[in-house]
Image (tube, rainbow, N blue to C red; front, side, top):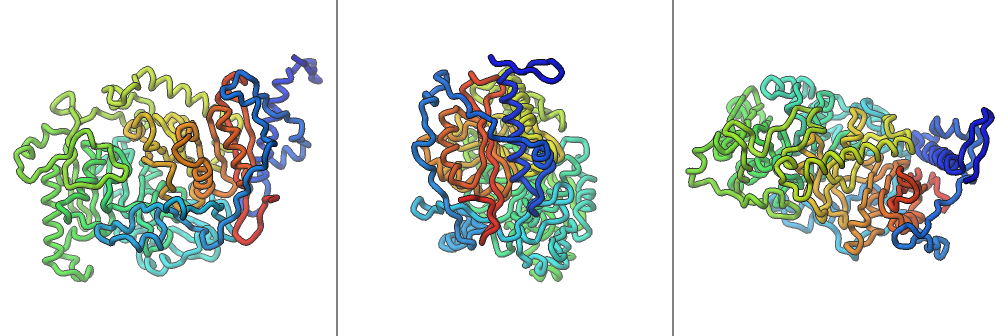
Length: 616
């Protein structure tokens, strides 16, 4: 091995020189492309440029015969990569599976037309979604909670429709979010204080929450300061850009609706569920929407209903609805809540709070209720495109009469690394307690390596992060910080259903099939982690489609970390070579003999109508 001598007499190997040079070059790429959006280079890039860093000194990685698939024989110069053209500017906010025009062709019954309806193969776009002209990187958290650049989501309709409700205000080049809502015009903080007088929000007992019909997600935004992580959703409807605004603010959200199919979350996922004037008809269809909330609500969890029909006697005139109609609506809700064996804990003003019982023994009378229809217990987590039914999800077994069904959870943050009940009970086939702990140690090591490669990870530059193949949630747990949140995606074709484990750790996530578009607006994630995704989907669907979808949801100057077998990454690298991404391949942290590699990519800054950094 060649050795070089430093000025202080110490020697460095050629491998050490290669590693230092490789990281130096990648920091240059990050700094150059991950600008503020106003054209000013990152301080890392400026420092490297000042010191005369030269990326040309970095050799190509050596792919020798010890790699699977004989990657060393692949000649990337054999053919040029396919160049993906920009889509028309009219697709700036395109959401493939919630496209407005396609939605209007589906039935309106039970909000079916607002659900996922993905385009057939012949209608898929094979172009890159442009950012709107003037797009800038969102403000860092926590400023982003209150301010969003107007250029990023230039829609003013909510500022007019919700003007008196303190949702959103237009102030020149930015939108300001005062923290108000239809049911909390005095601000989300005061409203949450009211809830906290009944619900144990402060002590870590409540960590995960579901906000149905979230608006611009101010409730979820203000819960974050109390260490509660909310999954917010709203349909793509006449109120433009609700979910888009939420994600621009740095708040977890997806496009979604309670309609005809089950929510894409596991059973017993959330400590609290919330509806603030969300316009969901809770009492209709034999209470199936409340039964779906019950399915995803953890034993002992809370459901909050704020707005009609609560306190209808005093409000029916201001709501401009008949007394009889509102009275019947509340009667049906109370009836279904009783059937679900929920206990009403509070009704004050226009807000009512129920608590789900902790186990079957605490609601023994329900077994004799002839109106109670129970779902099949083995289908509690079978949700992807499965029809929602008016049946009650049975409680899992509990160890004692007073214990929570499915197992007790530690308060957060202890919950993050405690052994999840689903693993302790052996519910996840093939995952022992030892395997869980080993997985945690592995991801701590991987994430530490990522931090060495990309020092922006802990800087606050990346707020919205996605893990496309989350496994047991080890990547998100190792990153846990108030500066960021992770959307943990468990693919529907994954070998093991681990999303319930992820929620038991106090993290959030969703089921998804990466052969389809994700339920979000373009440009909603700063950093995407793709571990084994392309190996998993090999032969299932076109990799180009997956990568184009990743480009759609990734913000300009956002980064992607691919971790996969080397032969897989070479193919991925070739495809993204035509996508206006800059890439760098690095070895596994355990050295070049490990066939798994890491490919880092940074999306270039370019917008509709020009101002592109691409040389293509």
